[in-house]
Image (cartoon, rainbow, N blue to C red; front, side, top):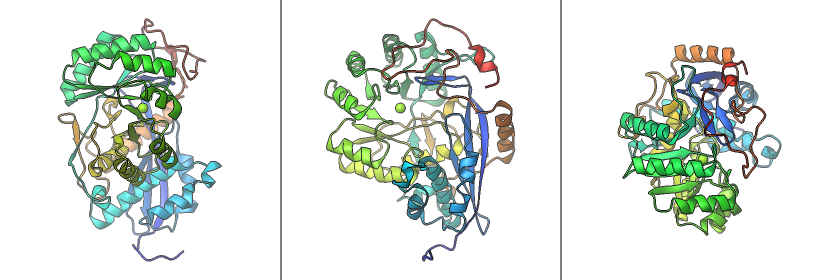
Length: 423
Ligand SMILES: [Mg+2]
């Protein structure tokens, strides 16, 4: 279809899967990040040689083949026609057979990057313009297995408090999110209260990824109502469970699991279950749908925050540009970023200062690939392979029910042998 507009045309699409090490394996309700992130770097190149960058994850697995499979759809397409792209590769009814939302997101990032590089404007300027030049982040605390050298374990309240204090002193965080759902809720409650006691004046949030029963979620929420909570995030699963929780606590409820598209957002407006919607540039299919969702939230006076699905610098840039342009962002964003040991962008990891990161100002997303790092970490992926994100290396064969009835043993110390065997 011939359309007026930019002279840009997509000529090639490339994907490179990389593995970047984490300080220590991060534990969550379904399993663990086994000491590394597997991310796929996406490059979209135009006929005149502009290269835009995208990124996606995928549960510890490579997305190279999925991105390569989109090439016949994309070659010849004008990267400025982003709304057309949505229907071209992620039409909502075609998606019932083949959900490409996360692929669409990676391509959208790259197309926005191309448009910014072509016009000389940062992505935030293409999205309506920045209303802030820095985005605040929460500390995002995880229970962690020890790293291979034995350091980095977070299992006891003392270790958790020490970890939070160290992160606060290094990066300036004033908001702390505890990723729970790993140990018995009463044990995690003690951990959360220990954090509150150790960090007076700071704000807190708890997120066990939906594994408590509704009654368990109500019990947990009531036991922390005296603390400085931003919100309680997905303590139980489902809009109806969250609605029942919301009717039984004074703490705002939040989700990144049951409001992740516009149908669910509408349902939540009509019958409120969550007060704060965590927007994820990957889950929603790009930065632009998140900006649209933020507008709906503003209209209906719902809160928004920014979700992290595990990012390197490219995806982090998408979160920064999103955070820059949505006026109603009243909460610190989440990022796993500070758990990474390195990044694939030029200059290394983007620095935190005072708990926030500066919004990139260079054209496009404002980050450049460090080709040596990409090569190094693509090699590391070939060496180590994928990992099962939804399996716990410490409990082979285990998987959680919803609600969970079998939590990890908080007295079990040490590094599971599975972490050091080929996966
Ligand atoms: Mg969450």
